[in-house]
Image 1 (cartoon, rainbow, N blue to C red):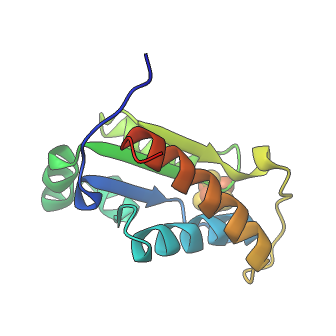
Image 2: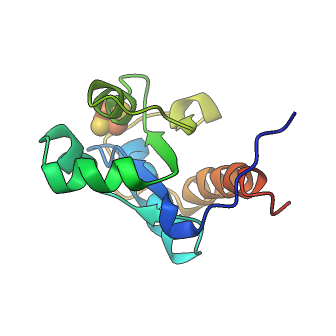
Length: 129
Ligand code: SF4
């Protein structure tokens, strides 16, 4: 049976790795766009990595955790899992045929590709499709 929820966008927490590469910045920009589109709420991965208590508690209060990693090093996934969180939706951007490079100004088309994919996944989960 397909998993669905009735979560509000504010209960869907989005954690991009926001790394120093095109794919890290695609993750970041996709997180921004999903938040602006009302699909969820951009959250602070660094706060989780730093064990900031308020961030940990806010994350525990969330219902859906979305992690976006730029590459297989999987910093967002590892940071969240290290803090004891289960990830509900996940994408690793190089697995979408987007090659990693040092350019911090990623292609708009690549940002759109990742945003569209996650938007569909989150919509399915919310039963909006
Ligand atoms: S997952 Fe890859 S792109 Fe993202 S922060 Fe880690 S090393 Fe950088």
